Length: 338
Image (cartoon, rainbow, N blue to C red; front, side, top):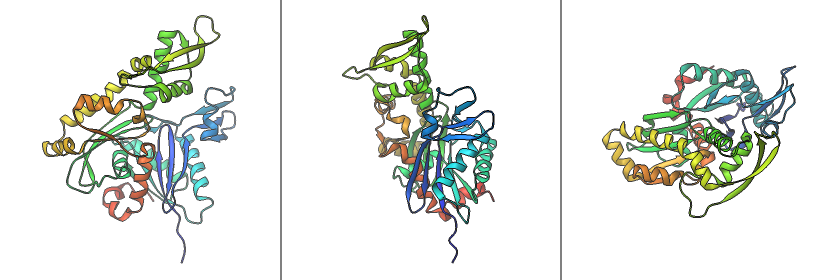
């Protein structure tokens, strides 16, 4: 009997690509960064190696992130990146793999088609699409098939997806382009305005991860960073405190809270009562910012839980969905592409 190609689930994130192979679990977790030689169009590095090149390349090499705000911004580079990851995971396959890819909940038909085409060109036999909040809910261990309301807030790198899920589908959903990247941008702007220093994306991310917070901390923490002084043009070191991070990050954090509030306002009363009982589940790497769960809980009055292994939730959910492709076919088969 012929062994068909593997079933692969891909969380095609703005910041990270996570690949799940049916029967093996998560096999790859790489930053979604590609380094390309501008003169020849040749891909020089993908993933972690390319991320180290961000902001440090000579003129003929460009290290870019081909996905912005949860959707493809550079089609050719995304296709090359997908091909690289699929080959790395599947090796040289006799039969092309079936691939399920996560997409934000409010993407347009054009954006969906771009994902399907990129995956097909990269070597997929069939492409299925699944909405990120659904995959996140499955990955967080929620039984989405039951007739009761569950609210999931998935904060990734490019988008925050909020959905109320019941009977295996989204009843009310929202997708906003405020997530990890926007937090980084807010930090860069704040440091420039307050300290007159320009810092890079990676330094901003280090600040966010190490001392970033959106809820007042009992103990103020600090971290030294280096940047370029705008007055002298020379490198300068400054000490940043977590209280300053609170000032920098509170605005984008409140945009997420307001969006959750508006989804709750549009939720049918019976489902809203379920959410009040069961609480709100937070998934995705962006929800790990210190105090975001406390802020959301304070503003909504509903218990907020952070899912286990938040970063991998969407990929794990995609993997579980792969194992039940026949069950999900009614929901996803219209997206299938031959």
